[in-house]
Image 1: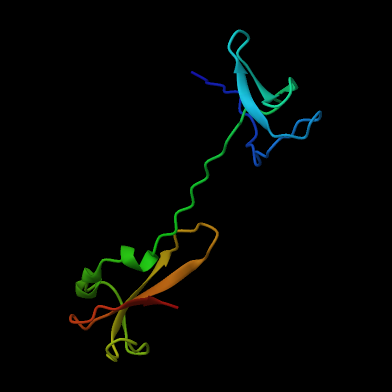
Image 2: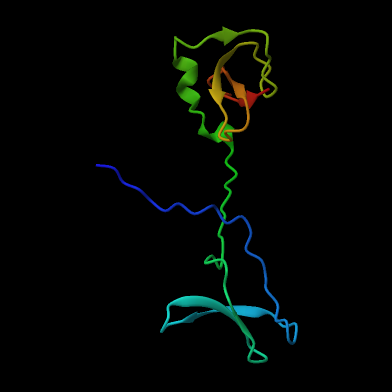
Length: 127
């Protein structure tokens, strides 16, 4: 079974439209009879049909602290490599577990993450 969908291009910008008669802002309205979207001025009787069915874009970008997602118990994982070349800035211990992981942002490269092996500290950092 083959499914086909009419895919429309992404609408990258929804701006504010202004009345060509009185320069006031146009507001989205729906003609319930014809089920079409149009923009109307609240000051005069001007209206125009919408050429873009999108009225509003709610784009959420979440900033997540990637270090908060690292479980401190990785220091007990015997399969992870350890280094003595990176000193913990918090407690001064010279041993840390490290691993490489993809960042949450797909456009960025892989990154090395370090966790201090001092169980009293467990400081996490990246370079």
